[in-house]
Image (tube, rainbow, N blue to C red; front, top):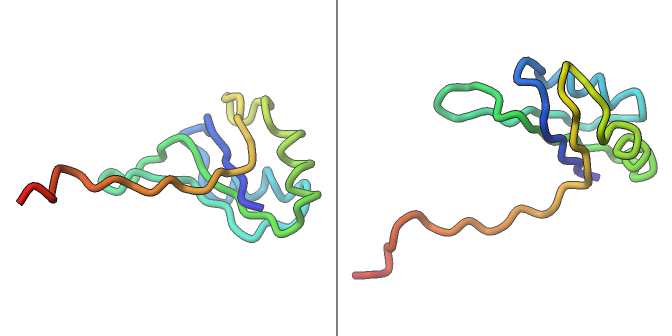
Length: 92
């Protein structure tokens, strides 16, 4: 299951995010999303857990919990919306 983790401390890195979720089961991946230009955290990330039961337990336990001085928002990630192209390229 892919899990969205919001309101993450800007100091948290991928390894720390992984550690938080490993308390509940196996973590396939954990990544903090960063700005392409600055490399700074955007304050959210995604965790992939292969066991849906463990993932749901983690979601219930961590949603609303304070980690690193911030209250996490944790839920199942929704599929990414298709992006609209920038500008009106079909005018010509």
